Image (cartoon, rainbow, N blue to C red):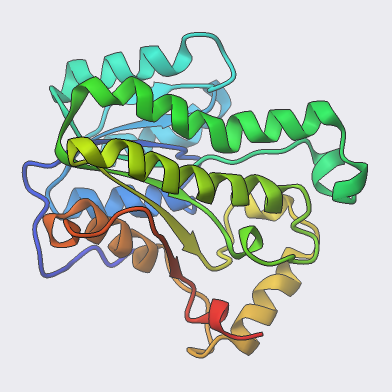
Length: 259
């Protein structure tokens, strides 16, 4: 259950959240918290199949739902145009999509195909840069752009495979976007949640073991919740974080500090 209360308001903030898959997705956790705090949203999912599961959530969020497969020509441009038409301007963007072909994800990185590596990089990393460019003319002053990373970007995590190098590129991209967009007052961050049981994470080999290890080793002795992930996103969207940009912020019960 997502506890969406909190001590500050996002009333008047307007933004786009991409990557809703179901009620267990990180994108939905963020959307639920931001909506409760007063933000106005547009949300997206990847295809018509996902739309079946996401449409009731979008209705609950009182948010237009747009299908957007980032690999399709002009899909992102259409998404941004529709979002601006509904919202007027964009105060925040939350990018929560990642994908790699299963055969490349489950194999050794050294054996990954060029096509699979490039596809994973396009969907999981470069789409964030494309979204930032398309949103840029419509961003309000001090807008926040947020994407999702994982510890495997910084450390070699067993069975995370191909996504490790891709997420490392994403975190580097965040730093460059922060440098380039900071001249206009815009802020860019990566959030790095600990393992949570999402549909996307279930595609990783031995994910249950990864979650068990996080519980056993993290200083707080537990997994984080979607609410806790959403609360961090809300802080980064809010004016309370106005002096921060270019960071990767962990919300993982402290797991990243142990070896």
